[in-house]
Amino acid sequence: MAQAKIGIIGGSGLYQMAELKNVEDVSVDTPFGKPSDSFIIGDLEGTRVAFLPRHGRGHRILPTDLPFRANLFAFKLLGVDQILSASAVGSLQEKYAPLDMVIPDQFFDRTRARAHESTFFGDGIVAHMAFAHPLCGRLGDVVEKACRDVDVNVHRGGTYLCMEGPAFSTRAESNVYRQWGMDIIGMTNLQEAKLAREAEICYVTLALVTDYDCWHEDHDAVTIETVVEYLNKNVRNAQAIIRKSVARLSDVERSCDCGNAMKNAIFTAPEFWPAETAAKLEPIIGKYKHR
Image (cartoon, rainbow, N blue to C red; front, side):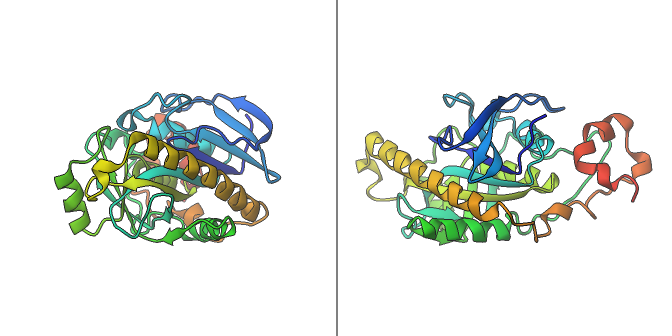
């Protein structure tokens, strides 16, 4: 199977990386089914990367229906140990303006229908990983520097509220989220971050602000055309930021703890692991079976 060092997940509007060279289209099968689409694997800044359009080519999959486990497991099978995830978001605070970038450091879960897509574990093997700090700070540093390299207004830190969707918030909900101190709102990144941690893959969110959520007094005056214009500009900026980030990561070894996140997290002793489940999770837990 083709291998890559860095994974890229493209959100709304970001369905390809035009500057990839030596490209191949790779379909990956996983124990959790098919990913959102085939992977586009190619060279970016001299590094082999694997790109996946989160919602599939043509934006065909609802946030609730995304095959999160298949997507992240496929990245693991491809040899990816670092993921840059781009995601369009709404702003819940005045300071995060459309066209800004946010690199959050926290999540708040408001999803309801994704429990089966939030962990690889179960079926006889129990794990409870630490998730107090859900994103890789080292990767966040890299992406922040890349944002400044391309002269994009970037905010470091903040909480990404992950809602169920597919409808956006009511104004009442949006105002409550603001009172809770939430910063941005989206529909996809929490499950990705949880599964990346279980797979011991570094993960960072690059949040592309397209609009103020419906709490803002000017919300009703914003047209769909304006939002699409902001989205397209954000996508161009995100492509440049990802390219700069990959260049910085190309020759750097991981120095964070993400690669050993499950060391003390698997509660079920190896002698009790069901053979079928252990075989399914081998790429994730195999290194711990002789502990």
